[in-house]
Length: 292
Image (cartoon, helix red, strand yellow):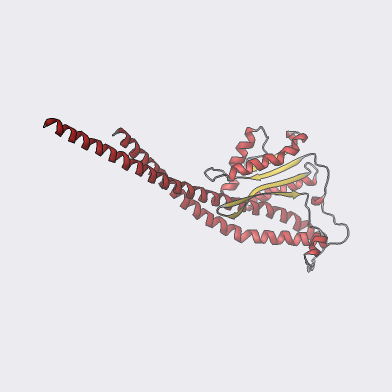
């Protein structure tokens, strides 16, 4: 009978866990829908603006004075990496941490003091801090409540440092939301700005159809920084959607596994109960036979 009590206790425990994971799945699904709406409302604008910038740069003739596109020897690099603040979302954070370490590895020869880490998210910040990287600030609240203004401050700081030659490159690492079950790691170079080649554009049959007002220099001065700020904010929204998608999938899997485990335990309980009843019947029959 002690075995029956243990199985009953385990069934109750797994049932309780299943209720928790099911509730977390529903909460994450609701957050995912809001995050998808945010991505759908912003990212197309960001991508269109970026595409316009690349078109303009690719088809422009003559020398363009764009300080943010200056290529030089990399002596100091900044890496912006986005993760979540909480766990229970599968391999979402571990994949980002692994990718960051992979990207950082070639820069190790520069010295840790020349690798500036901007961690947007608690999990990646904790992992890199354990590896003795010096983090450039606390950006945990940005992931909880994404705010364009706060992201713009970081982007402006990076652009200023690049213009002042305090850093020579900026890389962005984040999870791209493809669907609730799939998140793709993306590693993109923010600075220096690298426009798509004119040759590739023409090979795709694209033509430039823009009227520039008031002039080229004014547009570049406004468009380039705006595109970089938009890219960082769009990546943050994309990553948040990926986080909720990953957590929804992870909690659904956990709920399904708990259901399967409950069925196995229930079968085990029924077998143990049947064995106990059979044993008791045999004892009773045996006792009755001894009394004859």
